[in-house]
Length: 89
Image (tube, rainbow, N blue to C red; front, side, top):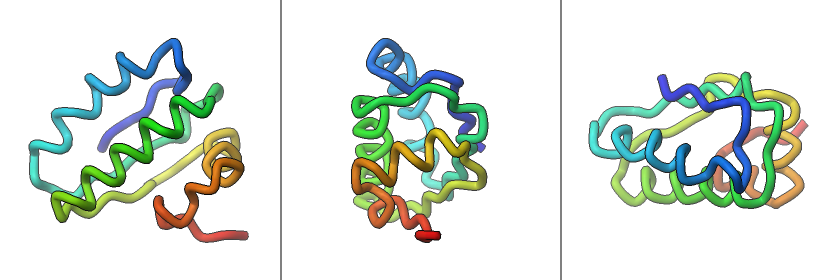
């Protein structure tokens, strides 16, 4: 399971990108745990969108196993819920 860090913001996107890359090359479904995320910004959401698009392009299943309210709100505010296949409440 890919466990996201507490901070998914511009100050940490490069670190997060390096964390994501090995998961794409494994060619297995990617379960993402975003329950620890307490700080997110547009750069972080863009990085997640890129991860989702890359996984889908490579025909890999990718989904959130868990996500924090902060992360869910950020994804929804930036209009990425459909891309990340999140159910609207």
